[in-house]
Structure formats: structure tokens, C-alpha cells
Image 1 (cartoon, helix red, strand yellow):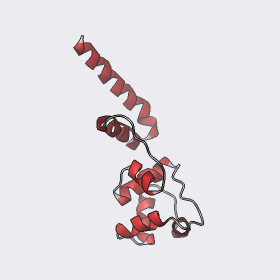
Image 2 (spheres, one colour; image 1 turned 180 degrees about the vertical axis):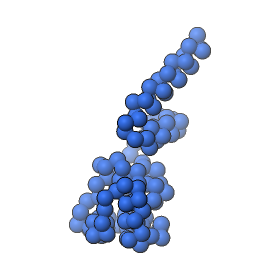
Image 3 (cartoon, helix red, strand yellow; image 1 turned 90 degrees about the vertical axis):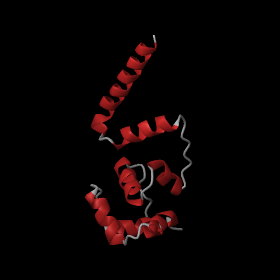
Amino acid sequence: MGNNWFRSYRDRSGLSQEELVARLQLAGIDISRGTLSNWETGRVSIPLGDRDLRWALANVFRLSVPDLLKAAGYEIELGGTEWSRRAAWVVDQLPEADWDFALEMLERLLEKSHQRER
């Protein structure tokens, strides 16, 4: 059994395998048409543990990363508010080297907010 969800989203996006490969390569993903074909047929599992690949596929298919993972059959439980999910999404889009800085900025903002409330 193949990854029907993947083929379905590729078809919905109107992209051929070659076009999808090109878009993923432009996003920095090292992939060949043969690999993509193997993903679609289920011969090889799509490595959705790769953060960069998740982000690139979500962008190409115009999905959020959680929606991409749901389409792939993962159960995603998002806690928090819509605002916290948006903040998490923004941080997730940053290069890993910037995550600490982004979280530090959010923590400083929280601290200032608490100081204003006093």
C-alpha cells in the first residue's frame, strides 16, 4: 500500500513528480524523482522526522505542518490557544540556530508584561 495521501496532495497541487522534486530541491531537500516515486508507492517511508522536509512539503502543499502530519496519518494533539500555536509555528520556521534567541525574546516579552501588571 502506497502513500496515497502524498500522491493525492501532489495531484491536487497540480505538480508532476519532476516539478515537485524541483521545488523540494529549491528548498534545500536532496531528493530524486526515484525517491519521490518510492515514497508514493510505499516502497520507502517518507522521512517526516526530518524537520526541513516537513516544512518544505507543507509549503509546497500549502498546509500547516500539523495538517501535513495529520494527512500522513499521525494523530496530532495541539494544546494551548490559537496564539500559542501560531507562536510555535513561527519559531518552527526559523533556522534551528535561532530557536534559543526567539524563545529568549518571547520570555523577555512575558517578563515585561508581568512587570506592567504589577
